[in-house]
Image 1 (tube, rainbow, N blue to C red):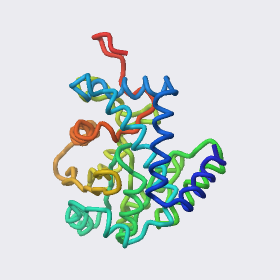
Image 2 (cartoon, rainbow, N blue to C red):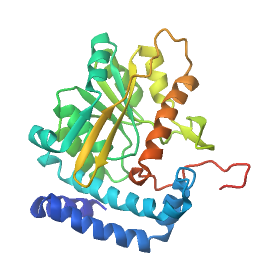
Image 3 (cartoon, rainbow, N blue to C red):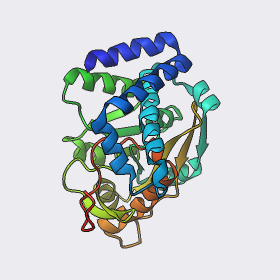
Image 4 (cartoon, rainbow, N blue to C red):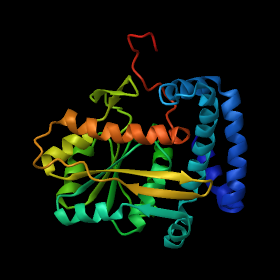
Length: 284
């Protein structure tokens, strides 16, 4: 896998973005048609979200294609600069970030495996915000170093899971911005909530840190708009201070925002492992 990433990095640098997207799209189609397991899992995950069942396979195919574009963008991190942002990225809700920064308690940018969450971090960092991101380490040390080097290239401080609690508190204590993924729990200690009339395990980390530091949680998403343009969206903060909320109530507030984005952009949700809990109605 490591050598595939190295090859992807070299090829995308030589061919440029447009041709790299074209090749990535063809490979994504092959993956969709020949990887029966991945296709079934993606369709299973989309089933509660997409009400028109005749469109599920269309959106599933979009997931594979958009994920291939996501990888191209990641390989081309060295090409991301303020000129790229001005040309290709439309930013919405930056005033929400600035108001939260003025409060001086730190910011939790809570996102999902949606659109291009890696590029969201790069753009936010290049806009001048001091960003740290919690990342799940890869099993292969070389792959992990490859990913982390790309993130650090654009000014992102990487906090590995496993050592993240102290690091997260430090970021927020120093009034920084902490990026967390909020749709998939990898710890086994998340909060089971209902989304789209199904049960899912949502990470509790954002609520945990917000309650203990007073940091504001800002749901943040980086959505692909057409093929090569993007929207970086900062939603209204989920208020914690003074509302006497607990972890589950705060997490539910984020889950409602997540539900809205998944419904609007199902073809940009990169979830390649089974997401939903089995329901009493027989769904598995």
